[in-house]
Image (cartoon, rainbow, N blue to C red; front, side, top):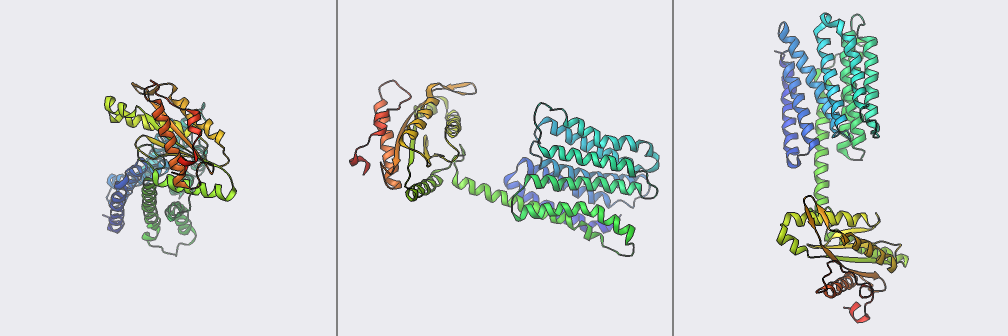
Length: 438
């Protein structure tokens, strides 16, 4: 056995365990694929323990170790592809896995399989291209064509150099692995374009990992007297592992921050973020002597939906209403869930009372037709109260009270009328000075 690989195997197993413990806290599709890739890296080192085995066993260990290294890189790359859930992306992944695994097997098989190298090298570029051409009716992400171009270049390189006397097989194998991990670098750069330590370390690690398969052969050819320990060439693997763990931790921190400021069910800003945004909006309006508007929306008959159809249907109602409200306002405005069945909308400047009324009417049109929730058809209504800064109130608390009182006026007036959708325009716009100061 090649015991020199054992320390690297132990280190990778420990890093994989650390990665798994971090990933398990928020297991996602990406973290599962990454974890599978690190299991493949561990398999790579485990297989290389048996490289000195005689005969077919040594060749089998070399094949399994090399294939595992390639599979790990392709999985890392695929996890970063934006459209990886599409069928064509899965076909591209299958084509890359199949052609690379086949080609490595032929290289390790030696001269006996030399006759099949040319067809296999051609397949490395052709099969992924054919898989990418399947969804021609839809625009593809530029990264997809970058990957196709990368492997087309690899295919040409293999056809030109794989039969070179002396080191052709080594050049071909190194080119395959270089392409895999350079592809990881490019894909990760596209997927994590953010200025964080985790993204930077991972991208740099993948670039160094790919460079190993260029620098090491170059030094062996031109600087044969310079000896570099094998552990040095394995350092990029550990850099990438640390970088990926940092990325997971950064994502978890960002997710926790998002949960602290957003409603878990609808994804809208919660009351805490709503109050902060309203305060900032009023401060900006005060400085620029502009207007801002607040709409408070309370759903009618929502309790009846929960009581008769169950809370799961009620949750679907809230989610659909939240999505439709968000679609009816500008991106600069804020839609927040501020209660069980209550929503608040902050209209940023430039706005006016007439603009606020038009938004309110647009929101009420949502409830003209029943909501279709799978096999359920649900009819709910809503009451809206509108308050405008600074005419109706000059501070945040008074503005919220004014909008609430107008909403309750509308809700009270609609009771007993048989209308599930109520929007009393005059009463929602007129507010006496005495009530505005409440």
